[in-house]
Image 1 (cartoon, helix red, strand yellow):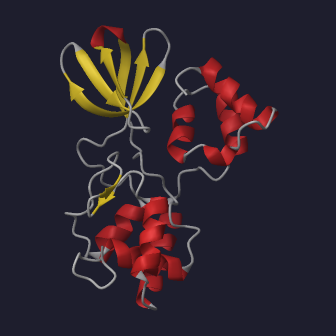
Image 2 (spheres, one colour):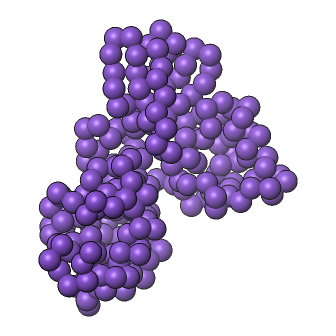
Length: 215
């Protein structure tokens, strides 16, 4: 995803020869393709992943109401919620010592605050924590990289990609480095969940280690 020519080869494997499934690419990788800002790449991305669009304010408000209504109308199952968490959130976020490290560790968050959780899940761009801002780096050799900055000096920048791989880039090789307004966390993450699945997911996220059905 760092060069237009390479991206087009990848997209040909998906759209042309069907050797790769579009479902195999995480949304974060698709968004990196969009950062290339190439007309042909963008056309193919929009064709292959039409659902990856920025939700409008009205869409977000409606989905927040749906989640709140679902949470008020029944009880969740912690065990089922843990499975959903691992599928939707656990690749990037740790909770109770399990999960990925691309995003913040959620264990110490105010997870009993339903309004806080709903807002940040539906609109992950509203409050991107320091250290987790997504950067776009354009190198002088034409490569375009994206990820979070884990270390920075006057001479070197260390960039961590979505896969967790760190790349050290000499500043003299960087043409453009700019923070992106969008979080690495995808929007519309919970839009396809049923009301019961929403209750299950939140029951696990909001639980404490002393809750029944805990670790």
